[in-house]
Length: 211
Image 1: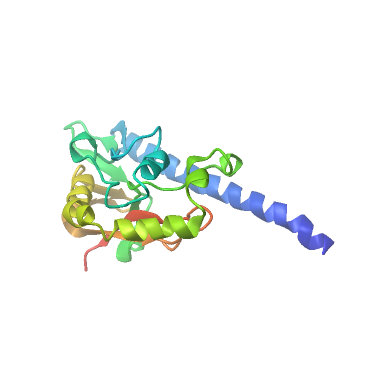
Image 2: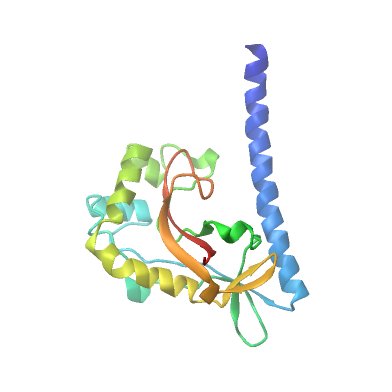
């Protein structure tokens, strides 16, 4: 029992270190690509503006009675550009440390929809998602219901297209893969496409090379 108790902190620490290694590796890859191809650093992520009242998305959701039909994007106030680099002609690229072989199956591309992703030290009372949802089960149900709303049927493809078409394609380990050769779709990431926090699912965009 004593050995088991001592090993738990080590395992948790090791996971944190591995996570940092993966993040740093991705950052270094982006930096190397920009330097090698004389790209400018141009970091942009989608920013969706949501209905509701509050200082954050969790408060906005609560102000609307947790009704996913009412919690919807304000399209004209949202920004959909996604990029990591810009060439001298002004063309934008998303840099991903994937190979073409990796992209034979769907891989994580973007998570533009509201999500729970706090640092462990900030999770608990005072965190808006912790305070406004009873737990992962209620939150995950809310995400499932989002994808069944009328506005999702109307806007989800528009949001998806605007995000991936904001750049020329993915700059991978094997060079540029243009958007015409890629397939994008929405999924609920339950951990199979990338790490999630404490079983709180995420509505995500995934990508693969077309068959």
